[in-house]
Image 1 (cartoon, rainbow, N blue to C red):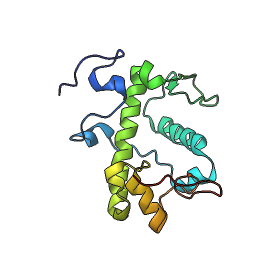
Image 2 (cartoon, rainbow, N blue to C red):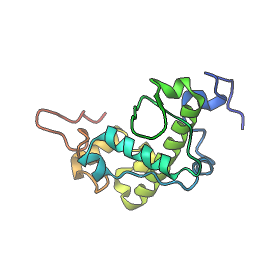
Image 3 (spheres, rainbow, N blue to C red):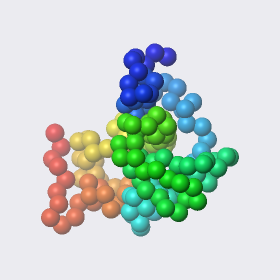
Image 4 (cartoon, helix red, strand yellow):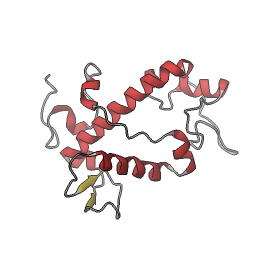
Length: 165
Protein backbone atom coordinates (compact mmCIF):
# COMPACT_ATOMS: atom_id res chain seq x y z
CA UNK A 1 0.00 0.00 0.00
CA UNK A 2 1.59 3.32 -1.07
CA UNK A 3 0.96 6.12 1.42
CA UNK A 4 3.02 8.79 -0.31
CA UNK A 5 6.14 10.55 0.86
CA UNK A 6 7.91 10.27 4.21
CA UNK A 7 6.80 12.97 6.62
CA UNK A 8 7.99 13.85 10.08
CA UNK A 9 10.30 10.85 10.23
CA UNK A 10 7.34 8.51 9.85
CA UNK A 11 6.42 6.40 6.89
CA UNK A 12 3.59 7.70 4.73
CA UNK A 13 0.37 8.12 6.68
CA UNK A 14 2.02 7.80 10.11
CA UNK A 15 3.33 11.38 10.16
CA UNK A 16 -0.20 12.79 10.09
CA UNK A 17 -1.57 10.44 12.80
CA UNK A 18 -4.58 9.58 10.68
CA UNK A 19 -5.58 6.01 9.88
CA UNK A 20 -5.06 4.64 6.41
CA UNK A 21 -8.15 4.09 4.25
CA UNK A 22 -10.78 2.04 6.12
CA UNK A 23 -10.25 -1.13 4.11
CA UNK A 24 -8.11 -3.27 6.34
CA UNK A 25 -8.25 -1.02 9.45
CA UNK A 26 -9.38 -3.91 11.65
CA UNK A 27 -6.19 -5.78 10.81
CA UNK A 28 -4.27 -3.01 12.57
CA UNK A 29 -6.08 -3.15 15.88
CA UNK A 30 -5.72 -6.68 17.27
CA UNK A 31 -7.81 -7.94 20.20
CA UNK A 32 -6.87 -5.54 22.99
CA UNK A 33 -9.81 -3.92 24.86
CA UNK A 34 -8.84 -0.75 26.77
CA UNK A 35 -12.40 0.52 26.91
CA UNK A 36 -13.39 3.07 29.50
CA UNK A 37 -17.15 3.58 29.34
CA UNK A 38 -19.03 6.88 29.20
CA UNK A 39 -20.19 6.52 32.82
CA UNK A 40 -16.57 6.31 34.00
CA UNK A 41 -15.67 9.41 32.02
CA UNK A 42 -18.70 11.23 33.45
CA UNK A 43 -17.83 10.12 36.99
CA UNK A 44 -14.17 11.18 36.75
CA UNK A 45 -13.18 13.33 33.79
CA UNK A 46 -11.71 12.74 30.35
CA UNK A 47 -8.08 13.06 31.54
CA UNK A 48 -8.51 10.57 34.39
CA UNK A 49 -10.37 8.18 32.09
CA UNK A 50 -7.56 8.51 29.53
CA UNK A 51 -5.03 7.68 32.22
CA UNK A 52 -7.11 4.67 33.29
CA UNK A 53 -7.22 3.37 29.71
CA UNK A 54 -3.47 3.88 29.37
CA UNK A 55 -2.82 2.01 32.63
CA UNK A 56 -4.99 -0.86 31.38
CA UNK A 57 -3.08 -0.90 28.10
CA UNK A 58 0.24 -1.01 29.93
CA UNK A 59 -0.97 -3.81 32.23
CA UNK A 60 -2.12 -5.83 29.20
CA UNK A 61 1.31 -5.84 27.57
CA UNK A 62 3.05 -9.20 27.49
CA UNK A 63 6.43 -7.48 27.95
CA UNK A 64 6.86 -4.64 30.43
CA UNK A 65 8.42 -1.62 28.68
CA UNK A 66 11.54 0.12 29.95
CA UNK A 67 9.81 3.49 29.51
CA UNK A 68 6.55 5.01 28.25
CA UNK A 69 6.13 7.94 25.85
CA UNK A 70 2.72 9.62 25.81
CA UNK A 71 1.11 12.38 23.79
CA UNK A 72 1.21 15.06 26.53
CA UNK A 73 -0.35 12.91 29.28
CA UNK A 74 2.00 12.85 32.29
CA UNK A 75 2.23 9.92 34.69
CA UNK A 76 4.34 9.65 37.82
CA UNK A 77 3.12 6.30 39.12
CA UNK A 78 3.57 3.77 36.32
CA UNK A 79 6.60 2.05 37.78
CA UNK A 80 8.57 2.94 34.64
CA UNK A 81 9.83 6.34 33.44
CA UNK A 82 7.25 8.32 31.46
CA UNK A 83 8.01 11.05 28.94
CA UNK A 84 4.94 13.19 28.14
CA UNK A 85 5.68 14.81 24.77
CA UNK A 86 3.59 17.79 23.68
CA UNK A 87 2.43 17.09 20.11
CA UNK A 88 3.90 13.62 20.55
CA UNK A 89 1.98 12.23 17.58
CA UNK A 90 3.79 14.71 15.33
CA UNK A 91 7.22 14.26 16.91
CA UNK A 92 7.44 10.57 17.79
CA UNK A 93 6.85 7.71 15.38
CA UNK A 94 5.71 5.34 18.16
CA UNK A 95 3.17 7.86 19.50
CA UNK A 96 1.88 8.50 15.97
CA UNK A 97 1.41 4.75 15.48
CA UNK A 98 -0.39 4.44 18.83
CA UNK A 99 -2.63 7.34 17.84
CA UNK A 100 -3.57 5.57 14.64
CA UNK A 101 -4.35 2.35 16.49
CA UNK A 102 -6.50 4.28 18.99
CA UNK A 103 -8.46 5.92 16.17
CA UNK A 104 -8.93 2.61 14.38
CA UNK A 105 -10.26 1.07 17.62
CA UNK A 106 -12.54 4.07 18.25
CA UNK A 107 -13.96 3.79 14.75
CA UNK A 108 -14.53 0.04 15.19
CA UNK A 109 -16.33 0.62 18.48
CA UNK A 110 -18.50 3.33 16.93
CA UNK A 111 -19.47 1.01 14.07
CA UNK A 112 -20.56 -1.54 16.69
CA UNK A 113 -22.46 1.08 18.70
CA UNK A 114 -24.13 2.24 15.49
CA UNK A 115 -25.73 -1.21 15.19
CA UNK A 116 -27.23 -0.79 18.69
CA UNK A 117 -28.19 2.88 18.26
CA UNK A 118 -28.53 3.47 14.48
CA UNK A 119 -30.52 6.68 14.75
CA UNK A 120 -27.41 8.61 15.89
CA UNK A 121 -25.28 7.82 12.83
CA UNK A 122 -22.23 7.04 14.96
CA UNK A 123 -20.52 4.99 12.24
CA UNK A 124 -20.87 7.83 9.76
CA UNK A 125 -19.40 10.74 11.69
CA UNK A 126 -17.52 8.94 14.44
CA UNK A 127 -19.40 10.72 17.22
CA UNK A 128 -18.02 14.16 16.53
CA UNK A 129 -20.23 17.23 16.66
CA UNK A 130 -21.51 16.83 13.12
CA UNK A 131 -24.58 18.98 12.45
CA UNK A 132 -26.75 15.90 11.83
CA UNK A 133 -25.64 14.35 15.13
CA UNK A 134 -26.29 17.57 17.06
CA UNK A 135 -29.76 17.79 15.52
CA UNK A 136 -30.53 14.22 16.62
CA UNK A 137 -29.37 15.07 20.15
CA UNK A 138 -31.66 18.13 20.12
CA UNK A 139 -34.65 16.13 18.95
CA UNK A 140 -34.41 12.83 20.88
CA UNK A 141 -31.65 13.34 23.44
CA UNK A 142 -28.62 11.19 24.21
CA UNK A 143 -28.29 7.43 24.00
CA UNK A 144 -27.08 5.34 26.96
CA UNK A 145 -23.54 5.47 25.53
CA UNK A 146 -23.25 9.25 25.26
CA UNK A 147 -21.05 11.10 27.73
CA UNK A 148 -23.52 13.23 29.63
CA UNK A 149 -20.84 15.63 30.88
CA UNK A 150 -19.88 16.58 27.33
CA UNK A 151 -21.48 20.00 26.75
CA UNK A 152 -22.78 19.26 23.27
CA UNK A 153 -24.64 16.19 24.53
CA UNK A 154 -26.56 17.88 27.35
CA UNK A 155 -26.30 21.65 27.12
CA UNK A 156 -25.96 23.39 30.46
CA UNK A 157 -27.68 26.55 31.57
CA UNK A 158 -26.24 29.44 29.61
CA UNK A 159 -24.89 27.10 26.91
CA UNK A 160 -26.50 26.42 23.56
CA UNK A 161 -25.87 23.78 20.98
CA UNK A 162 -24.70 25.35 17.73
CA UNK A 163 -27.45 25.53 15.15
CA UNK A 164 -27.40 22.78 12.55
CA UNK A 165 -26.13 23.97 9.15
